[in-house]
Length: 136
Image (cartoon, rainbow, N blue to C red; front, top):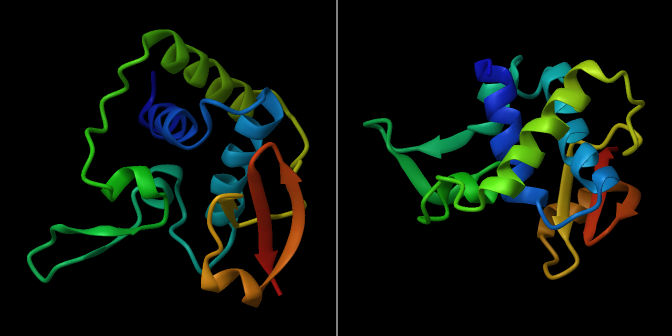
């Protein structure tokens, strides 16, 4: 599996493995929307692993674009079946020609939190337990 597909699959797994197929594709859409937006890195892996870092290059805990990457918990998928499915979804997202179901979203959060940044974004949709937003 290519690096791009692996980065996307890991993000889908850790961010949305408990979501519907639509919800998992929506998480992939956010990554692609960021790749296309000049405010973010221009490739999938750099978007997925975007984080604030110390002057020595270490990732700062809880300062990543996608929380799983710097939450202090192992980034090794433990549920093999769910990870295989995430890899399949990543392939669908890259090669399937699906339309963006998020309305151009570059951000999302779960229903369980209310981040401050949300008031500076436009709500585009809610899919499963994720609320999606785009820049104003």
